[in-house]
Image (cartoon, rainbow, N blue to C red; front, side, top):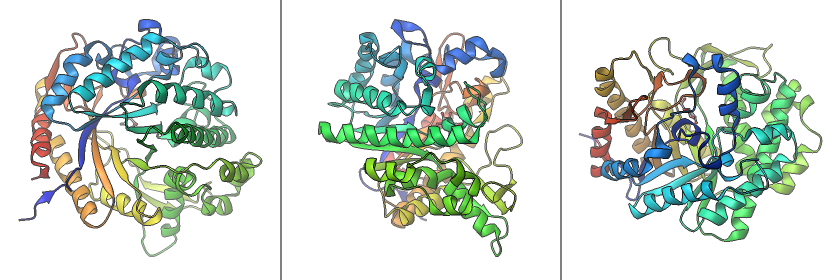
Length: 448
Ligand code: NOJ
């Protein structure tokens, strides 16, 4: 029998984000974020008018939650800081109560032997920043840098794992080119302009972190599907390369190599045309290398060549699952993506910063608690992570998404990823069967 044992010192943890989990969106002087604003002004965009309140009640309940995390045995907890709790106006005035809250959370985690892995930005843009021009303004680089510096100064003595941005490809385009998130713009040029500023803001934060000499690790979190050609013998192979560059390379190349992917710049005239002037020089001048990368892996994508598509490729099969769950499942994809990153970017230190099963809730709590499917999901994906480590990927950790059932962006509260069930009315927590399974995996440092 094969033993799927993790390497020594492998980090098994869980992940969350502020706007999905904290709740209390107006507590203690927090400024409004684009999510609070959308929920207030366009509630119909959210499934069943879901609001950031209550999230998973974490803002109010973190003490009990961290005790529970200790029982689960996680070695690290991934959380994000809400920019608007620290700087309610996005810039300028610091809200001490926001700093105090994260200090309490970080202290309690470290006292309980749980390493905080902190994202500076997980989608909850302060509304004030959007009003100043948002990510399409070049000043975003400085605004983000100032915010990052405050976080490093306030928490950098205890936080040793930092990520700048979570899934930048998602938020830049959702805000500015797909038009699904405030300010609901549909302009490819805007999406790429924002993306360029986000990369420069990432470099800025990394540089500030280095200059401060705090001795931890810093990187970013990128989502990448396992992308395969429909027909592995023809032009679909090229389509898969295009898709991989579009989703991953657009971020990973600047993060690791200080440039955008040539394949897209040369092969996609529509993209090359809309790039801001001086973009290549910007990257060359500002480049700041990272210590590690976070990988969010959820699904496979099968693509075919399409001459008329901007990126020369179309999905041959939707990566959204049809019934009851969010994505198509393909555990071997996590192995393929880990090996791909290792080969392409010279064996970087990788953390699986997210991977998890989201099921549509039918309202039956008992069946949600008895989540055998989530157990199989975890087992199969974790086995693949062990295989990738054995095959030479420098993968150092895995964070299950999500610790709690929480707000799933515009899908509201009906998609549930948690190991811990949360009663939205009372905040009561109940451990799912998968919680007990993961606890054993952590204790044994081995998957069955
Ligand atoms: C990735 C995002 O980072 C997270 O916020 C989201 O909840 C999960 N995907 C699941 O869809």
